Length: 189
Image 1 (cartoon, rainbow, N blue to C red):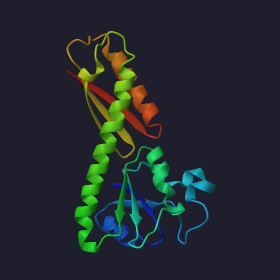
Image 2 (tube, rainbow, N blue to C red):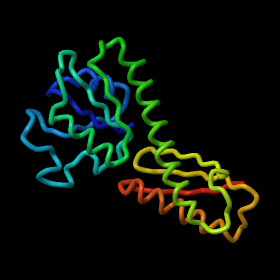
Image 3 (cartoon, helix red, strand yellow):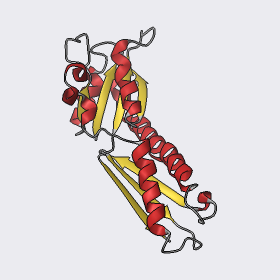
């Protein structure tokens, strides 16, 4: 999994980074160490960590943190890129496994499902003669910059309407997530 680590103060994600790397995940960050005035992408857009497919962003806040800091702006960028964001307070090393896995699972499920499904349903309202779009069951996954939608169509949708439904779903996903590298829409009855 590719993870964007966002720190409230420089160094607060050190243990989390080590744990994720040890578990085989790839970590990136918004700032060089020591923290410079602007993020990596401010000077050269291609240096932005979100230019690569990213599965989740984790905001690590230190225990005595008083409020949000500018070093947390990576979370805002992640949300704009439709990357799920999880916030944690600097956990003890022995708590990392359970805290991180639960947070990552919840963030991926929430983001990959609710927002995307609503976007597709809204676009399907514009397809003529398909009836109530809420009768179409939609399953969405997002991983590694790829969005996969599976539409389970009711019998009232004809074979002739299927390409239009797929096109509208693909358009909705592209508008909702312009940073996705691949958008794939499948159908089943």
